[in-house]
Length: 510
Ligand SMILES: Cc1cc2nc3c(=O)[nH]c(=O)nc-3n(C[C@H](O)[C@H](O)[C@H](O)COP(=O)(O)OP(=O)(O)OC[C@H]3O[C@@H](n4cnc5c(N)ncnc54)[C@H](O)[C@@H]3O)c2cc1C
Image 1 (cartoon, rainbow, N blue to C red):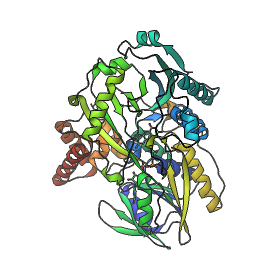
Image 2 (image 1 turned 30 degrees about the vertical axis):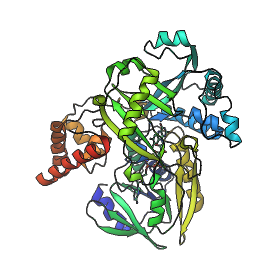
Image 3 (image 1 turned 180 degrees about the vertical axis):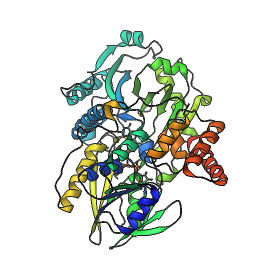
Image 4 (image 1 turned 90 degrees about the horizontal axis):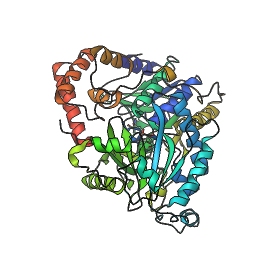
């Protein structure tokens, strides 16, 4: 169904379940619910995978550092899910060797017990011994199928042999494996397309907002035309990520489920740093105790991230202060490599929808997920709080089971080993900027593009990898305009929109 057909169908037939939010948790739940035969509508007020899900560090990971908080359940689940992502979407999620440069031996041993007793506000630097213990647990969680290899622990001399530009002050370097989500945006769209294969009971629309609701119905607004209309679902799933509480307020419910924190990243064109890290992520504790990363992103390097409380998720931007911090932090691990602002090709910032807590140290807030339930008359609202990209499938399964229970239905199938997109037969992800007209036509036909930025920032890697030029924006804008029947004025507006978003949110001036 095209956009207009879907909109028309909604006016004559309400869905059983309405999912608000087309990030990974909304889309994951959409796939699972529609596979069970439940008539479901997924909406996003913006594009799919444009909120927190587009701002992640791209790690499919168990989160080794959460072991220190005693979160064994979370880590075990996320490691299992990491393995499943690598198995079910092998062209989009690959094993990622992750190296921790270590500067001390015994430090940090008391972090976990002090945290348990509630006496720890800021953990002390983790030394070699505590990291070794963590890695032994982590390997055990990986399980017998060894989707990724076991960790390796090197002394100083061997580590410097392997990575000659590494800071010679290190004592050890530990390498373990996680996964890299090469394109979270593509993975999300593939899941969505998979879901819609079930037929007319799976409907999804981007640029459609939830704007109101009462005990009988909810109001949706088409962001392209401004038209409002009503639907009457039996169940609402609030998957609005950092906007969960704002969405509940739209429905007349005053909640405080999320305590959002902002995280930013830079993408650098720094061939020397890219060569120095090889195919490894470097994951380490900075001087101030923050856990930060240097990450291989195709031919570029991504660095990040921050973890700062924020009130309004729409205001998240990577600030100059963060840029300075990230640039300086590289020097802790690779002191001989110069990083400068001119090497930044893209920056991005997003907001983690963490569970609300009074904890002072943002890094210690749990990344676990849960469902909160409210009611709009007889209609339950399930709010999906917390969670990681990595555990989306398990969270979606939990939400789907709860929805099936409410609808008095039984599960028909599960998603544990279900391939995503073409699975093993998928084409490798495209990283060069030379698209043919046929390729663009194919993307437009398949992938629910509404605006030019959907194509340039989410269906392709052009913006992330710093490959956009004004000429390319104009050329692709023209091709897209031909496909979507845009007037000359519309083409101009779409190009201006892209230029505005790139400058405002991503520090890119074409
Ligand atoms: C900086 C950062 C780094 C991270 N790194 C990692 C990592 O490396 N690995 C990992 O596993 N996890 C990571 N995460 C966590 C992970 O990205 C998030 O937990 C996950 O993406 C949340 O997805 P979501 O679907 O719940 O929310 P979102 O992706 O934010 O989706 C919510 C959607 O709701 C829509 N919406 C809001 N209001 C309305 C409305 N009224 N009507 C319609 N639609 C609406 C929004 O437009 C948005 O698209 C990171 C997060 C951040 C911010």
